[in-house]
Image (cartoon, rainbow, N blue to C red; front, side, top):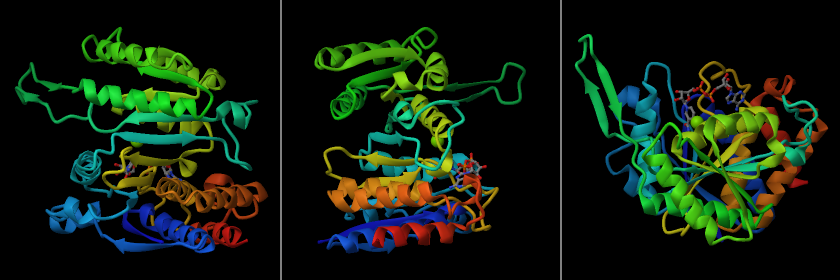
Length: 352
Ligand code: NAI
Ligand code: MG
């Protein structure tokens, strides 16, 4: 059977890494008797610079019939970053109730961690980031502009339903892993929303007596991720905390070039969206040297989500084989290979 995929390469290195990922994914599904039917969308900050919008007015409607969305990265010099977030990513995440941002973290073979002496097993974890509400809110405003007492107010919105469903997702996920959940909080400083989050966490935890649960203030948790990563497995956090922790987790393992993510609508009523954690990397855009592994692994997550488990495993295995050999490596991995050379090597490994 074939799957209909909406492909949004976006800007900068997003375009390069998506092209490589498609090559690898097509090879993997073909070997397992299936196919991907790609439809391209030029939605990007570059489009915004040209036309004034990231996507057309009926953009969400256009995406709604697809089985999944495959996104590169958006961000273009001269276009403010809040445009890319609020003009495309956040509307898609919210319209399709992609309330889970799943960011698995692992140390891949042939790569190194900045944390001396840590094994791949100790570094294995997954960040479950709340993806639809929280600190990323439009409520608030700027006041007394240009006056001496100028100030800004930003309100965070946490709903009981929103907090409960993300925490339940984390506990369910923990049952398929090592059985441990750590919740990121900051209820000592943030005295309304975070105690609310903690209360719901405790309520949900009571339903999962088989899972070891704990909570940790975000600052201490960041330190723990560096000092005692072996004590973490499933980490659940709000939109902002989860975002920060997942970049940190990626950085302490193989780097941003290796970190995939999924924006998941768990009931599967709407398309989920898969992307690398990294952005459009204007500092290396156009040079053909971006590492395509994060985007390729995001593709493996997409295949897994679609139920193509064997094809997903084949992509993971091909990435591991090529990285372990260490012959074809992009500059961030200490090599001299181009994006295309690494993509070709992984596609060849998939074909076997
Ligand atoms: P970034 O992730 O694009 O780059 C951070 C650093 O990591 C840069 O030095 C970059 O060269 C390096 N890097 C990232 N991906 C790499 C790869 N695949 N291979 C090798 N090196 C890689 O983050 P930055 O610089 O903060 O943001 C750049 C633009 O991307 C901004 O416009 C930002 O808004 C946007 N962005 C978009 C995201 C998305 O589309 N979901 C996520 C994060 C940022
Ligand atoms: Mg981020």
